[in-house]
Image 1 (cartoon, rainbow, N blue to C red):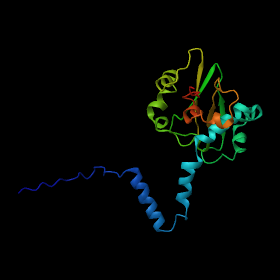
Image 2: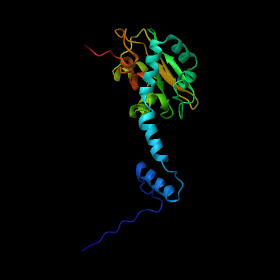
Image 3: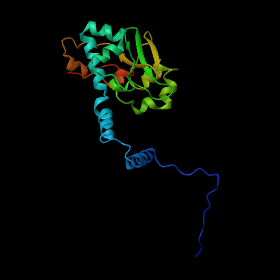
Length: 207
């Protein structure tokens, strides 16, 4: 019987464990030293899964569609408007609202990483974090939106806003025709995370 012994080169880079495994290893090490306060992880888990949600952004949009005074506040001082709901927080300290019009469509990107206004948009979707979206939407936004199912007429200008460390954006889409008389709760249902980022348009369900 022959035995083969494989040697690892001295300068070889050791295999790295998956990020999730490394995170849990770090947590166990810190927890073992008593450095993690009781309920700390559970509190952040609740924040990310329940509190940081696009439902909050949809609530703001529905309010702006039905309350012109609030709409003006949202457009002139988004941070104050969002603050009236208590929706500010990490990654949402300074909010700017971008209003769509019949001749203008706004789109959000973070060309360096994946920043969004977490408290009102929720965590960024996978496609938003992809290099392809971040690289292409700033160069050919109309084509990218079309590939995502949103066709913008040639006569409509598309403006792409790049998120920075200081500024987080939310798109205020146009209110669709056929929603006259709807309650705010009904309006919220047609405002998705993609609408708040600007890559989709609120749709009225067919009867």
